[in-house]
Figure 1: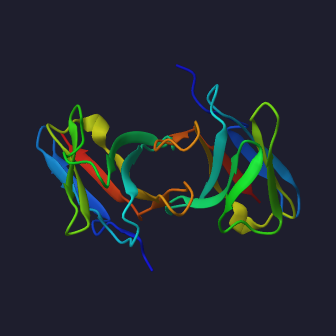
Figure 2: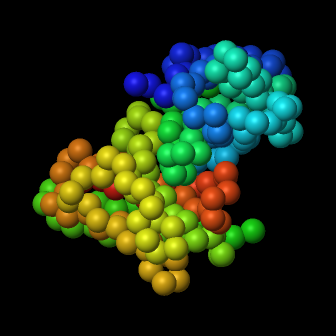
Length: 115
Length: 112
């Protein structure tokens, strides 16, 4: 069963606008972590933001924030004031505490920022 | 700050050949993970090591083997290469059971 679902294969957004990348997840483990990674065309996997299942507040890192809605099993990434350099593939991922530490990735969303 | 180092960055091999990918974790990181990302795919977990012992195993073919050495670097050995093995191979490292996995730049393997 798909653990991480990203329903937007591709998105086009005007520069300087905010963008929300959707992510829903499925787990029965009460302890888990949610991640977002950015993968530019060069291929490297860049860590953006992390949300723990017990964290009370939504995680924020600069222009990135994670809209964590636990009851809905949703962990959307919000990028404020998008920039051309934000054009990349974005992966939502999850780590379950009782399944060792491997990370399970979604299929990704390719974000295109338009000038 | 030091990052995860992977070598080589690019590798071209022919079918049925062998390949060895190397990963040097961030200093003082004791856990290493290997992921395989096929073209247009999401990364898939292969195998992990904690303190030089295999920790978890994913969808790693029997043709592949890996180990972690005393200096914590890891090597992924791939034999009888197939065209379908062409992919980007990532190594990631963490210290203990911390939440964040730091990814290396990846090794792009092309099998012809």
